[in-house]
Amino acid sequence: MSFLSRRKFLLQSSSLAALILPVDIMNLNIIVEMPKEKFDVIVIGGSYSGLSAAMALGRALRKVLIIDAGKPANRFTPQSHNFITHDGRPPGEIALLAKLQVGDYNSVQQMDGTVDHVEKVNDGFIVRLASKAKYFSRKLIFSTGIVDIMPDIPGFSDCWGKSVLHCPYCHGYEVRKETTGIIGNGDYAFEFGSIISNWTNDLTIYANGPSTLTSEQTSKLQSHNIEIVEDKIKAIEHERGHVKRIIFENERSRYLKAIYARPGFKQHSDIPKILGCELTNEGYIKIDLSQKTTVPGVFACGDNVTRIRTVSNAVSMGTTAGMMVNKEVILEDF
Ligand SMILES: Cc1cc2nc3c(=O)[nH]c(=O)nc-3n(C[C@H](O)[C@H](O)[C@H](O)COP(=O)(O)OP(=O)(O)OC[C@H]3O[C@@H](n4cnc5c(N)ncnc54)[C@H](O)[C@@H]3O)c2cc1C
Image (cartoon, rainbow, N blue to C red; front, side, top):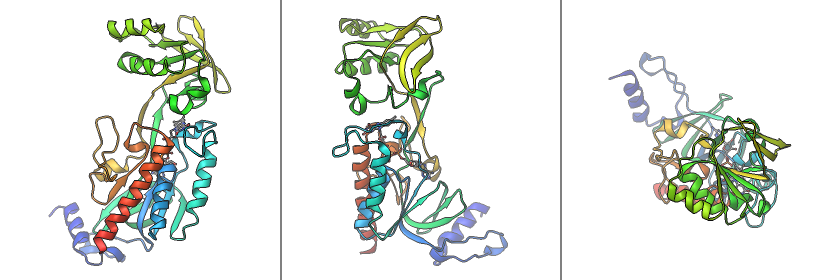
């Protein structure tokens, strides 16, 4: 038996797995110390989706720990839109109110911190924080979001969420009819170009190099007066995040009020992948209709599982995850 499989075997066969020790297992010098504090569910990521999951679980009397590193994706934007009852509010206010409301449920604890390791044990998971604290939980919910990878264009990240925008439904109304650009190329630029033309007819595509749009796409865009500019972008000039000009490497420039772009992204946390959760080709955590990942006992919700990136969708998926985790626990115990 290899070192790892023997260790795993010992852990899994121990009927005391939930309250182990410290134990020195068969002189392997492995001290398996189970955390004293145990939860029904640990929610990793306590933003809109995680807090919604925790509320559903709190209302189902579950003992829950939410651990949050405090870096929601929309922290760069001054106002969040298109979430009914909170339209136009600063995102931090929405999160604060959510935290206060979740705080009303006595069985739910909230903690600031970063989870840096999760280990599967016999009947649940051991969750370890960067602070070295550790907790046991029967089930896990990952609501860890994604990280946008800013392109190497000076000024881009300063304007992100203010005048460089990811979504017209979140911010398009505020810049309707304004001189607008899309930084993008190929199918993405064509699709986004057609969509954004709903909000403004003063629209240009900045391909940032030779266009990869097909001739059909190009003529369709041209028939809607959408120009394609191929000059390489040098920088975005702005005033406190409000874009003024795109400056090109050939020193030409264009004035504009808003830019749409879809930067690349990565999962905010690698832990689901390390635990064995499958990812989609696009890089999202694979889930079923109950928000279950491909690893038993592990659920995921919010931006880390979908391209439909809105607060309302994150909240909806969080509520579903909370309800479905609770159902799973009920059925296991009933
Ligand atoms: C610039 C910008 C503007 C936006 N504007 C709008 C808008 O106007 N309206 C709208 O509806 N939507 C908007 N969105 C989309 C919206 O912000 C997201 O859909 C929403 O934040 C997703 O919520 P979430 O809970 O899934 O993830 P997030 O809000 O991103 O939260 C994830 C949380 O998990 C934490 N976390 C990650 N890893 C760990 C770990 N290992 N341990 C502990 N905690 C961890 C993070 O620190 C973070 O607090 C915007 C997005 C961006 C990027």
